[in-house]
Length: 451
View (spheres, rainbow, N blue to C red):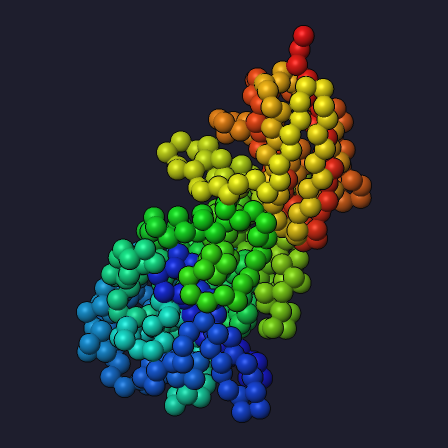
């Protein structure tokens, strides 16, 4: 890290499936570090926004595996041995490094220096851990930055951590995996990512749920933040505190990352991650989570010219698969009521003009009042948008694929597409905006009954 750049500590929210909004530091003339997602740190392990490398009473615990160290106190030694066992047995470090190398990176951990990467296990009673399930940040001595070794600090109770619902869960493996992935991300960029960025946290959460046990309650909370708020954009970053859905949202978008993984493949996903990190690296640190960063991430998206799997196709596909719950054995996530409603009868045309913000979704409940035999659709879709339709009662996808427009030079036009309705009278229509600008469409539905 360049000496002139401010340093920060990234923190994770308590018991959230979502883990980490960072501790953002505000650089004043006295170089004071301000924490944005935790209370003021204690004087023992975390001081002034960094992790004390010589905190009183800490010693190394063996068994973490090559390239890693776990440090604990006499009071946290038992918990620290558990963390070391998880890291050593799961080979977390080597598996994550293989991912980054697969994407074209060098697999370097930022802040590891010439030695192993450190993981500190502190007592959960420390002030820093009251509002945080862990953090990644710089090492300091006496509250002042000491060097560029950036370790992880976690509390000793993540093996039995109370969740928002009041239940207890073991979130050690997922927290360590999430934080280590952040360290690899920082290794590509060249500095700890200071400001919140949906892509940074969504990809780290994807890594956590891909390589660590899943906590069902936390995933349900993530679904709640995404699928009940279609108007919230993919790249939403919210400064709320605690366990609000807005705070959860960036991590919940791991479902989109998982969709890219499933459709485009692991190698393409990792190339996208590494290329996007390199693209945002030149931006000032204050712009890590800015629209400029989001635009750079989308510009590097691994679309397939052969199969037409564009950004908007896969973004809409996430909503099609999970929003409808069409996968056997997977419960359907909660669904919000449609944002718009239209009523039309036999021979009467219904016109819908959805307005969707950047990277957001607009939904319509279309009610014909009586079963129709067929519906003709005439749609003008802006470039980078898509639309699809469900039968209202059965959640069956009506159109075979998406109605979309991927041509950036002209508005889309879907002329007079007719399909049998199966005598259904209620439909859910979903308009997906895969661009960072507001998108306005015009869609006409002309129902008819065969006589």
